[in-house]
Length: 298
Image 1 (cartoon, rainbow, N blue to C red):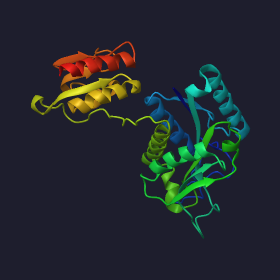
Image 2 (cartoon, one colour):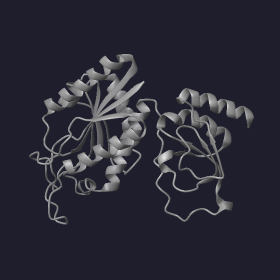
Image 3 (cartoon, helix red, strand yellow):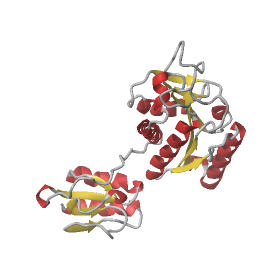
Image 4 (cartoon, rainbow, N blue to C red):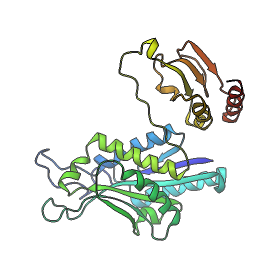
């Protein structure tokens, strides 16, 4: 199965009106694109880390017209269907936004997050349910639900599309979240988790490079599994469950993390351990077969 996500950062940096009211503590307003663009980029990086193909349909900070964005999205949809067949491709569109009410911090200040879909779209609702589930687990905000709304970006795309509103620009507290890098990354990660769930793919947390001192030999893990790419994860999970040991992406390994490393995808070059066992095959199915043979011996 080929998994493809089309990401959209919504409005451009200079789109009229798409900004917060003046914030005195910052000495300026915050433009919506200051949130949408980095979130869209973080979102794409999370998905690519899981082997998902990602295309940006609003690739600059300029205001890309809606028609140009949906034309580009439909071009990619047709390309993948024509190349691989409709039954072999799952492709979705996710558009990131920040909501607004009346453009003022005074008066009524609604807040919260919502996911918007085209009315009557079953598959988009399934995707919205998955993404909404994870968006609600992060920063505490009002959950405004899944909203059916006739929007160009969801209506004119010929596939499954959702639009997320991740707060209100004219709410005093939520406005400041727009330039909070931790919040940006949180929204991107949660949206990616929801998309992966919709694709029936497991989410693998990104393992940061260690900042602590190297472990003493007595404190070191006995065994650990190393995978080359996300495609190796399902087979490696079988081994990890049996041996009760963790799985590390190859690019997250720095120095010696275990006395014995079992490589289930890719080469052992550059890895450090007392013992290195290579179970990598010609493809993931060959790797799975080698793991099964290995388990018969342990």
